[in-house]
Amino acid sequence: MNTVEVVPLVDEGLGNSAYLVDLGDGRAMVVDVSLDLRASSAAARRRGLTVAFAADTHLHADFLSGARQLSATEGTRVLASAAGHREFTHSGLRDGDEVDLGGLRLRALGTPGHTQEHLSFLLLDGDRPVGVFTGGSLLVGSAARTDLVSPEQTEALARAQYASLRRLAELPDDVAVWPTHGAGSFCSAPPGTERVSTIGREKSTNPLLQREDEDGFVAALLGSLGTYPPYFRRLGEINRRGPAVLNEDPALAGLDAATVRAMLAEGARLVDVRPVTEFAGAHVPGALSIPLRPVFASWLGWLAPHDRPLIIVRGSGQDRAEIAWQATKIGYTDLAGELTGGIDAWTAAGHPTTSTRLVGPDQVDGRVLDIRQTPEFAAGHLPAALHLELGDLPDRADEVPGEPLVVMCGHGERAMGAASLLEQAGHRDLAVLTGGPEDWATATGRNLETGQ
Image (cartoon, rainbow, N blue to C red; front, side, top):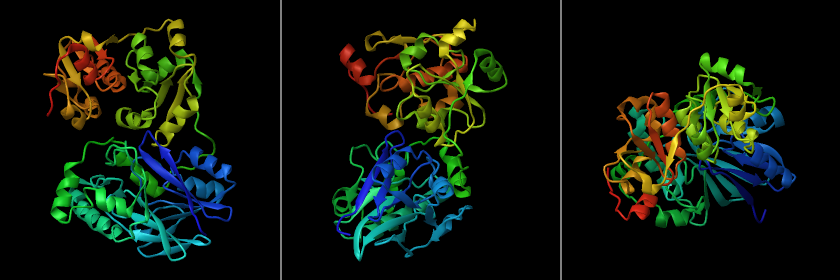
């Protein structure tokens, strides 16, 4: 085989890439594919390929793997680490094991660090290494976090990550690097647009790979770790047991206003996915605002309870299938349905609504709560702004001072989510800034402050 076609399938919201490999004989292999198989299935269909292999580099914490689904519905052979002790049919691989793909070969490389059982997969054409699927080991410009297993093992895994990266650096410089985690991933990929690389490029540009001393590597890696969504702590075990096989695509059943009101009284939670301006104009009291956009799944997994039925309120032009798939791929399978007719049906039934005030960059007055991630806040924030990350707000809303309060982020979507959580906690006289710190600085002619 002279050329090997490897097609990246990018999930911009989760910041991850799966890969479809054309094996050259009408068959394909997918690597680190999620339970939302729409993109990989479409890519295979366009090329007339049957997915014969599904390889998982590790027990994913940020999405449900689609490997078991493919095995159950298409007879796909699952390739994964034997040390992962998966409880469904798969070929358990260990360091050095090879799989004949029909002309191409796949060699398992033990690269623990991101997880204990992590494998990278070296793709070979004959004896020529073509590229390596590095999963959560070597990333473009970085390496994946090592604190997802347990606090007690974080440093030991960071040291294992150091050894794994050094091993990968021994591959020829022209070998392609195909990582799973990329920009936007909470598994610690730096910002940037490049999602694939080469060994040679990473050796010359990756700050972590350039660190010769293990202690310095560990300090740099652990010092870069930010917060991550709590759903990460659940999905690894679900993927080990095997996600439930879907017999049909996830969907949102229609629920009338009376049913929704009764379910809310029994503990269901309402998630409003409409744009910020629509939510601000009128929403059901107690609703959680998470606007539908590429990062919807991440914030759903961060803010919404996983142990209660979820009811969706959406706008008429928003794709119900997209909502259902984004929730399902991160393990939110208890979707009770959606409010039929949306907010208009709620008001037509005589049920109350509330609103949230929006303010422009030149209208900020009084206390400001900045709910961005800590590195964002440190890079530039309004003088005297209070800081509390949005992900911490569900457990720390009582630490937020009284009203009036302007809540802000970078554009307004996360700030509205924070405001909805504060409203649930009893806060009133809240406003949301329609913009970010740079907009405020431009409008007022004042300087931002840096640091924490």
